[in-house]
Length: 74
Image 1 (cartoon, rainbow, N blue to C red):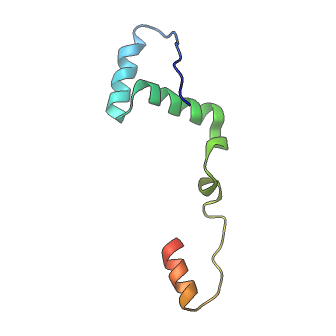
Image 2: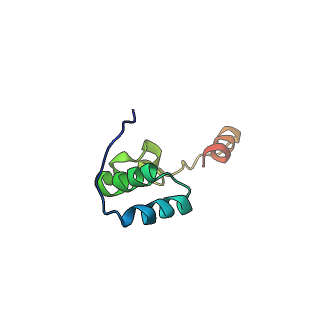
Image 3: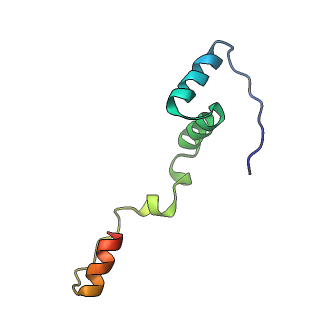
């Protein structure tokens, strides 16, 4: 759920922050949310697949089923 938040920052920073967000293709709110997620929460907000990517090794099996599954998922 999203909710409105009021923050206070330096007046000269506002236009610079808005321009940076615009260049990035984001709203200022989304830019701040991404920064806080990355800096404060770190990796704890990663999805399951992001946390486990590259940690599983493919089986050494062969056959048509394995070939079809490996082409689809690996």
